[in-house]
Image (cartoon, rainbow, N blue to C red; front, side, top):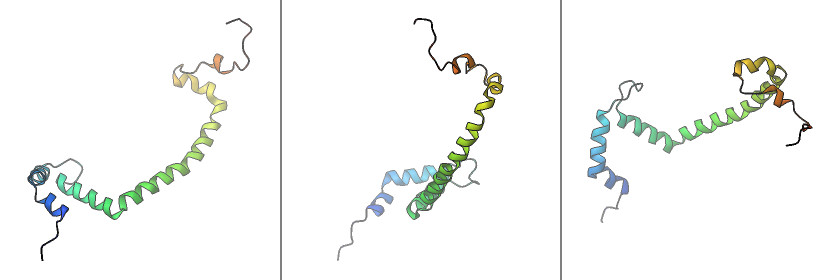
Amino acid sequence: MEPKFSLQKSIKESRLFRAFRIVTKKIILPGFDRMPLYDVIVFFIKGLMDGSITTRASSIAFKFFLAMFPAILFLFTLIPVRRLLIPLIGGVVDPAKDFDILPSDSPS
């Protein structure tokens, strides 16, 4: 009985992968507690396969979505005090043009 062809096994035995593994085992990035880059990549790929990273990303997106509505309410409460905020912004907003609701009498 012949062994089945395994793509994963053939990739791990290739020269390119061996060279990649040797190089990334020597690279140590700051902030990873002296862990080689290869171990970080393996940990990340295992997290993707298990679904833990996608679950965490979806929960963070959901929390940002829920936080949008209070943020919008907060920004709407700042509208009455925008004349006080204009000097802080640095003249980005022109208050004379903000209150021009009706067209002016001058021909354009």
